[in-house]
Image 1 (cartoon, rainbow, N blue to C red):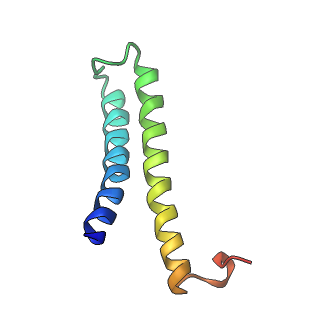
Image 2: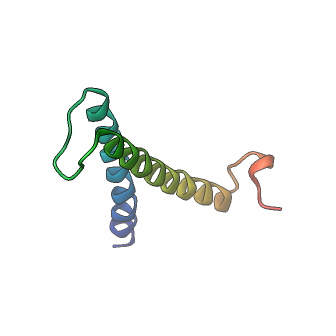
Length: 78
């Protein structure tokens, strides 16, 4: 059960980052999606979604690797 919960917790930011990439890609091709009135706003939301999703995923991996002692000395907590 704990593995399923961890999978769901990691799935949500992954989907958020993928959605951000899709919003940015659609903006570059000039396709405006319905909830956004402007292309620049669609691109900005895409960047925000990507940064939040990727940052959460990267932070989770760094935390797990620090706990298991698998990071370089410069990334260890002091």
